[in-house]
Length: 243
Image (cartoon, rainbow, N blue to C red):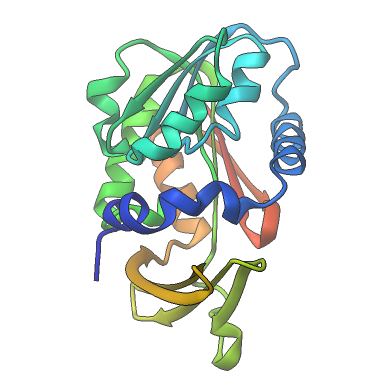
């Protein structure tokens, strides 16, 4: 079994944009998410996007006027981001997001950690360390927002653990979830057609089972005001504000 970082570099990174599907529709949904967080359409400031990928949130943040630092461990996805970021104030950094303290030296107005990124960290202590680092970095009135899957409250059972991600005439991606006490192992099965023949690639990695109340408690312990609501695609959305 690979780490989450290795899994994305070797397995999902090269097909991630395909996996998302209609990128224009995904971009519109991301803009709507930023609106729902209460971020103004014109908002000069400093923002950090953790697990930025190909820029689904970093690009609209920059278009709103933020100076954005986009951090992701997958160079392939950051290269895609930079193709679309020409002229926008985005600095793309290929690093582990746990290097937050080393990479972000100035106070930050907005920190995003969207799309289930938190559950990809190696253990709860790493999550707690990252949250405390983020809380220290925020300006007064600054916002942290994260979306992630709640694998604790309602674990999938039986056949529901088999999840079709996307398919077309040349590629099929399905994942299977295997629950343990503190983690869920994600088995990604990727079938690709080459020269008329189907080839299978399989990769597995662990994700954390984080309860939203645990996350909000850790943020509240840092003096932040928190709220929890529904996020996109069945995820939860945690928002924290520094008073």
